[in-house]
Length: 204
Image (cartoon, rainbow, N blue to C red; front, side, top):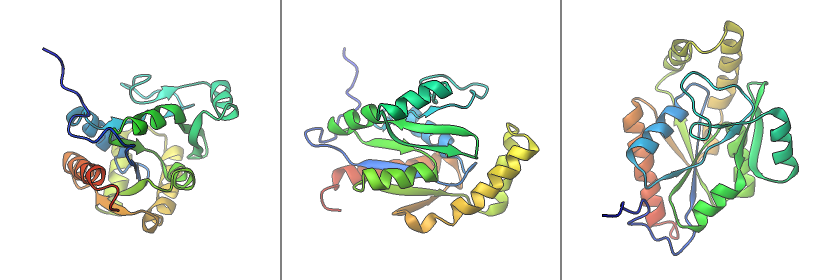
C-alpha cells in the first residue's frame, strides 16, 4: 500500500498561489501554522531561517532553520532569500526562496508564516500572493498571551509590545483578517481560505 499523495485533490498542473500569514507578535502565528502542519499535510509550509537561538522544544528544519550571522549574510549575498528582516531590533529572519518557488511550481497549496516586514517585501516580489492578517481577540488578550509565554525578559516583552502596537495598525494592508479566538478554529478558517483560493485562484 502506498501513502496518499498530500497534493491529491489539487490541480498540480498549474502553479499555485502563495498565502502569506502575518500579524502582531504573540498573536499565535506559529501555533496556528503548527496546527495546519499537523492536521493538513496537503498544505506546504515554508520554514524560515533565523539567527536567533532555538527556544525549548524547537527543532532545526522543522520550526526554523537556525543559522549563524555569517550563514545568514551569505544567503543574502547569494540571493537565496525571498524576504528577510530584523525582528524586535535583534534577530534576523528570512524565507529561503528556492523551496517556495518549487512548491508553487508543483501546484501545492503553500503557506508562508512571517512577520509584517517580511510580508511587505513579499508583496513587492510576489504581488499575486494572498495576504492574511491574524488578529488577537483584544489587546488585553494579546498582552496576556505574551506574558504567559514566559520566554522573554521584561525588556524583551516591552519591546514586543511596542512592536505589536505598530503591527496592529497594519491590518488594512491585508486582503483578509482572521481573529485568533482559538487556535484550531483559526487554523481551519485559514485552510478553508487556502483551499478555496487554490480552487478558484484564476478567478480572483
